[in-house]
Length: 272
Image (cartoon, rainbow, N blue to C red; front, side):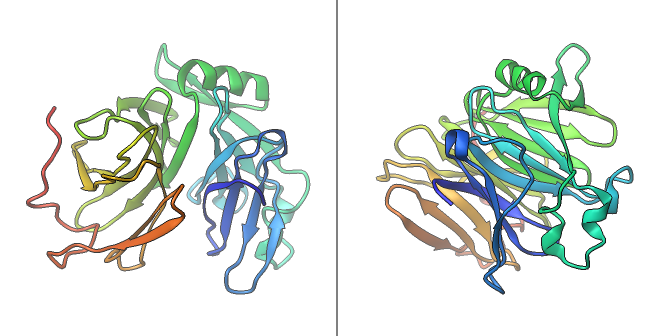
């Protein structure tokens, strides 16, 4: 694909890569173990797609799973894709996101009563995005809680997929003063959401702990480009991130010997 942005892992351990390429931008599934590569049907039209995630605990969905894609546009709708039940009957995981007759729905946030719904109307989804969450980027789902960031308004949105309610908080905190970009969650002693940063010089990597406090884990001093491609090793001992324009990928580890999902003692939190 062209202009690859973020993406996300599938339940069967392939990767969906998102294209940020206007009217021709799509999503592609890649299997690093076999070399498989194919455009997939998780989005209905071209767009500036950013990140991918899934919820595999939805009792109302085929195989209990639905898939989500964000779009980095001023009116970029958040897509929920539900494959047709037949997509799970071919005995090939590659067919799940690549079969016909899936359903596309788009997030509608109601800021009067802080509930949300899903609409098959793309225009309605774009209107909601434009009004409340323009330029959505990183997305994560864990235990039926969907989190995503909208960089233009510097906000973190949290959706309870079971109760169909939502909340919002600012990501602007201390050194985290630019735009939130991709995000990744690591679970362990501390349930921590890590953020990339975009929008200017000195883009960093920041964390948010279970209590909502922010801290900076990597400072991008001297790098006039965004941080991107955030990932962690399976044991959470190593963090990987790229500084985009430089095309360099770095590996980080904690000098105290703890994993990135461990205690954050001695970490300097941002002032309120």
